[in-house]
Image (cartoon, helix red, strand yellow):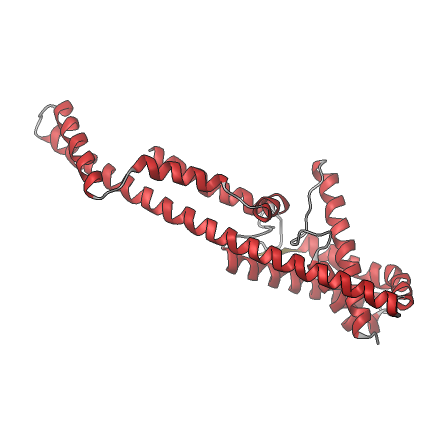
Length: 275
C-alpha cells in the first residue's frame, strides 16, 4: 500500500498527465491550444482523482486484465457522471455533453468514452504507473516533501481563485437573467397592448394609423409611469454580456458547451427584445 504523501503525488502527476491528454486531444481535433482544465493551472483534477481511486481500489486486480478493465470502466464512468451532475446542478448548464453520441446517460457519460477510460485504466496500471511509483518513492525526502507542499499550496490557491471566479460567473448570469426578465416583461406588456388595440381598430373599422398614434402615446406614458427606460435596460443587458472576468472567459473556452448554451440563451433573449 502507498502512503498518503505518495497518493498526493499520484493525484498531482496524473492530474497533469490528464491535462496534457486533454490539450493534445483538443489540438488534434481543432488545431488550437486551449487550457482544458477546470483550474487555471496545468492540471485536470478529475483525472488525478480518478487515477487515485483506481490505484487504491484496483491495484490488486492488476493481473486480471478483464476485471481491471471492468473496474476502471465503472469507476471512471461513475466519477464522470457524478462530476457532470454536480456541476450542472450548481451552474444549470452541462460542462460537457455527450447527448449526440450513442449509448449516453443524460449526456454526462457515453459508452465510447467509458470504454476509453476503461482501457486507459488498464494501460496506466500495467505500464505507466510502475515507473511513476518508482519516481515518487525517490521523492520521499525533505526536498520532495517541500516540493509537494509548494505544489499543493499552488493547487489550493488556484482552486480558491477559480471558485471566487465561478461565484462571479453565477452572479453575472443572475444579473443577466434579471435584466432579461424585465425586458421580456415590458416587451410582452407593450406587445399585448398593441395587439389588443390593433384588433379593436380592425373590428371597429377605425383608422389603424390613428390607433397606433394613440398606442404610442399611451405606451410612452406607461413606461414613464413605471419609471422604466427600455433602451437603458437593453444597453445594460448588452454591457453585462460583455463584462466577463478571466476565469469566466477561460472556462467558456475550455468547455464550449457552456459557451454555446449561454450564447444561445443570450441570442434568444436579444431576439425576443427586438421583436
